Length: 368
Image (cartoon, rainbow, N blue to C red; front, top):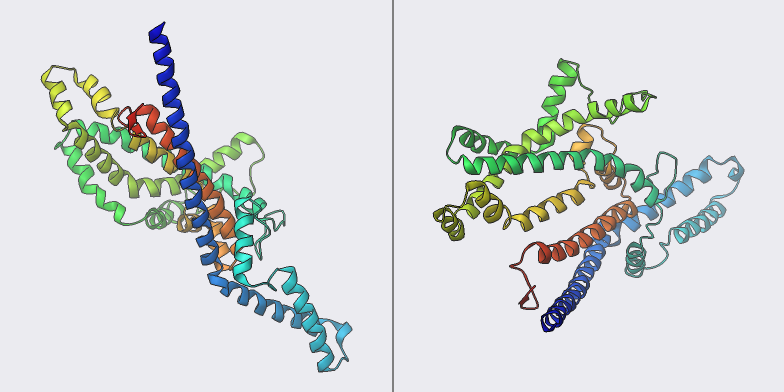
């Protein structure tokens, strides 16, 4: 009975410290997220310079509309200027540009933190909507589909390959992977250009780009196969660029842990190699492996700007490029805000997972 009471108090103390730790970490991460989003707002609007560009465009568009409108013919210049100025003032007020940028920047911050992403300046969704939320949600599935597939393929292939090479240190296959690792000095899209030239232009067996054939197949199975066919080249380009270096990193990572004293002690005691690999190498490396996988998964939805443009893939990466080219800061702020929230939540969850899966981690100076 006494043992049960002591155990209950211990668990209560652990949960109390865990709750306190989560609150403190949550506050710290929240502050960091707010600061990061505000910096993005300042950068995306170039400290207010984008406002001047928009005002200039408003003036140009107003004068063009007046000049091309037959109803204003016959008016003298002073009257037209007065009409134009009133129309310009109304448009500037509609965009909220009649207030100082520093004031509006905090309004942008509040809107971003409440996920009120507003309307885009120039970009629209396929349905014609200017709502930033709709524009992002329309592009998001394509990026998740392609880059989550790429990242999972690279992660698990390099993980198991690296583990295998750590057992075969100095072998021919190990030397080949080490020799191929400099391939990552060039990004995936670089190899993608050559793959397009070979498989699309020369051999003609794979599409140049896009997400599906035109016109799209009506049957769901044929549609899925068409999408998979369009995914082959971008996935292959990233595999060529990053498989060797990722495998080399994993192999080196496992070799570092396999040389620890406790591993040598286990070998001296005659512990089977598989048991050593499972309990003494894989388990200590679990936290950084989980971290890498989690960060890869949340980064995958952001896509890759150049890769998506090379393969004409309609995802978040190409949307970022279009937003930059069109000075559409609301879209950029919306994308970064959602990513910042995902990153903050992921970091907080990882902190909790570390405590659960790694007994070496302590909370408040006392082990769990």
